[in-house]
Length: 346
Image (tube, rainbow, N blue to C red; front, side, top):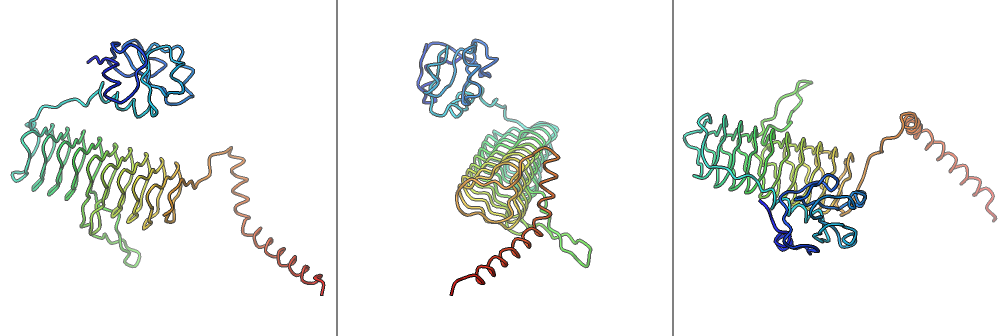
């Protein structure tokens, strides 16, 4: 569907500079856009593509707007503005309500009339599914689980027993919610499984990426609060709590019983040890190793970046000698102190 630039600008709260009647139908990258597309420039590294763009319009910051050869939507936050425009031009596809004949539905499942349940999905006993929920092909909704209105399970999503999903939650393919936590007790060298009796509670407006796993609690629930955004292939262990509007990038892992506050960001590949307290507005850069609690808001990093292999080996060798060097330094300090005392005037 085509949209006038004037209408788009009004809907997203941007300033239009150019022809209000110009129509766009899609979003495209700045460097390969064609007429009828709108692009954006949020990173100055891509400024070199602006002069030659064939897009009909560009979303851009006030500082760069005058350099555009085409119409612009001016915004202090071009990336956010682009997200809103993209949502208008490329809305989520509507679905038709209905239950596919190959799905398996428990007799006592409570399902709203306008739900879509796709092929080969399984809805187990005691489940409750709210209005306008979409359950894609191959999904499993475990016994006693609840899914709030307008939530979407894209495909092959597994909700294990006692999973409680809020409203407008988006869960991507392969995600597993409520699998057993890694609870084991040692009996003279033999591992004994600890029953995992809790569930998972997920708030409203949460997004969970592909193949991400969230374990159920040992006794109480694992909790994901409203507005949390989880990337692909993240591991959330049992009894973890994640506060509102925290975003976590791919391949991060959070060990059991750690609590993460509100409005945090956790970069890709970050590992958080168990039983930690992470406060609000704390940000860990990618690949950080978090082994202690952090309560003061700020940005934290905790790993060494990659270097040439020879340089890394030298660094490791120095680290291995660190204890010996510290002992020698302490001995030297004691000798200096003794000499100072010996030569101190009376």
